[in-house]
Image 1 (cartoon, rainbow, N blue to C red):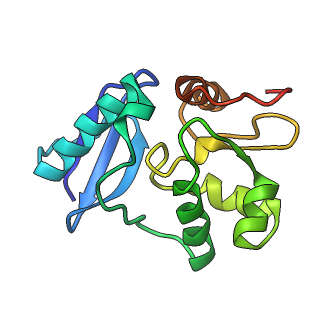
Image 2: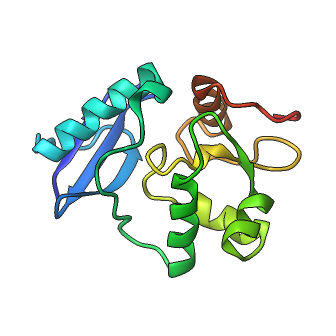
Length: 155
């Protein structure tokens, strides 16, 4: 599967493509580098997004997580509908998709395409909650600040 890495303000990131779709975004620099038109365009979009998320617009390329249950995919689709600069709580998202705040949290934590499927926009009722990025909660706080999103008290 073709991969392409990029430098970002929160560290190196690696995009992976399969069948003309982005299937994962991982922290760290990938071993192999392949400049496909899709990966180059996705990298360029991310560079723009890190400069100004509101100006970048929605991610314009197809996303196809490499794994996930139907429920997890429903949660991930709902994450994509949360506008830049906005947060929702795990509980609010659970009300939207069904399930519990805990099940939403588990699905969010298994998101294979973070940032592009914006799991950083989900917070707990008492603070930021968790984050699976290399920098953990510091990355989540940084991403929310970049978007101009409200940081919950306790976060």
